[in-house]
Length: 296
Ligand SMILES: Nc1ncnc2c1ncn2[C@@H]1O[C@H](COP(=O)(O)OP(=O)(O)OP(=O)(O)O)[C@@H](O)[C@H]1O
Ligand SMILES: Cc1ncc(CO)c(N)n1
Image (cartoon, rainbow, N blue to C red; front, side, top):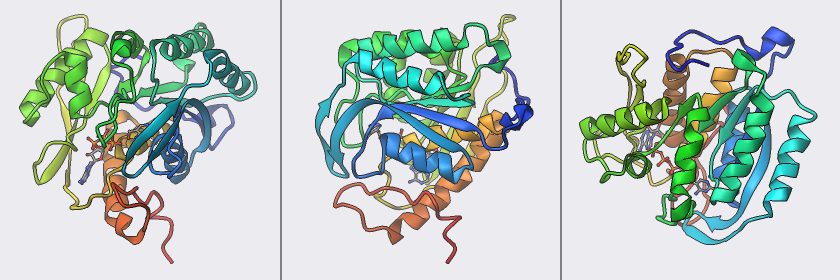
């Protein structure tokens, strides 16, 4: 899909499905707040059928990461093939990849899946997961260049402040202006649409910005900024995972990127506000994915 395409894409219903099939390729969080577990809740909250392929088993909780187990990449490939040999996939969200070997396995599968599909390829949202909220690394440092080589496949990437800095080879941005300069650089390097997330800046308003790469004529479509009030809460574990999965689901349902981001921002605000009703763990707790559904 051309990154400058602001229009709606054909909804999954175009070929008979009213509920799109969404696949998360990511690591696990046994406490349910981040990774695969968050993605499945996020798909469900956005009226999509959720599926998942596990890249890494992560022994983590709301306080931090304890250990990581990586299944052999042959088994990763077997999981990917088991899904795509059987199910028509409308959207994919890629999260934690962990190593260069995992990245090349997912890339080879994706390239085979999409080689003849053109505009009919599934939506691909890549959340370039590198470091958890707790500060623990989720991508080997030596795999950063492999991740850079993967990004051009995406329709949208959703880096947070530290991830964008690593992708741009710069210090973490302290202001929205610095964040946007890094996002422009990354968008142009990989020719990909970037959602630069401002959750880690300290402003009272949290601003996420869609930054387009320059087109062949050297023109960059103007930014689209999405603001929401900062919710005062420590329950921010898995916000990034949940947002990227939600965006993949809404885009697969036929919304444009700006419509998808606007809707997801509103949902995230209510999910953060409703998180205080949960009592999960002693660290950074999860959001409440179903605040708008559980009305009684
Ligand atoms: N305190 C907050 N109040 C309102 N919105 C927030 C807050 N924190 C994050 N968000 C929103 O949540 C989304 C994720 O933002 P953030 O930059 O924190 O991602 P992240 O660091 O990748 O998340 P994760 O905690 O999963 O690593 C963005 O859409 C952001 O605007
Ligand atoms: C598996 C996994 N993916 C992403 C994050 C980032 O929130 C996390 N903590 N764990």
